[in-house]
Length: 175
Image (cartoon, rainbow, N blue to C red; front, top):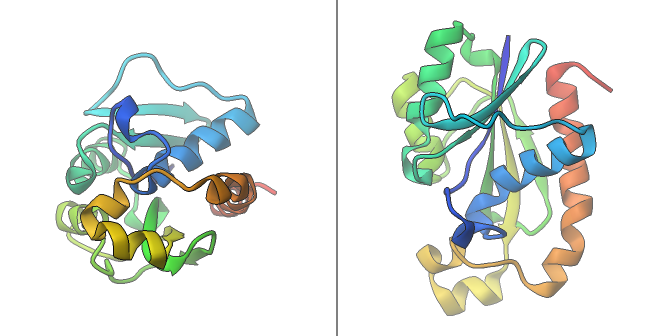
């Protein structure tokens, strides 16, 4: 069993914000794969199961994402090495996609929450670069992660999401 988790904040006001790139990536994946989310949330998360893979969008706010991850991990007895977390990273240049089999949080509060609830940082993650120094310097970090993508960035998003889709498929063993 594998668990693929996109981090983000619930609610329409956060759609297409930098912090919600994990949700956006999974929604894009679902659209391309013609999959559907379950209507009824479980353990505080929107989820879907396809074969031996569970996809998850925690509905607690970003900084509390670990709770739902832990509940699914515990209930389904999923090894931590089989949990993939997809999150934003404003220190990475916009559009850069970085996969790591484990690592530090890099200050990402969603990853801090997952680390805390799982008791380890030894799980794979995909960091999606949302960096834009000009916008970030104008807004500050908190407002920046909650800001919408620029029109130029929106044009680049499909290519970025295709790269994330490929990384998800590698993780779950599809080509």
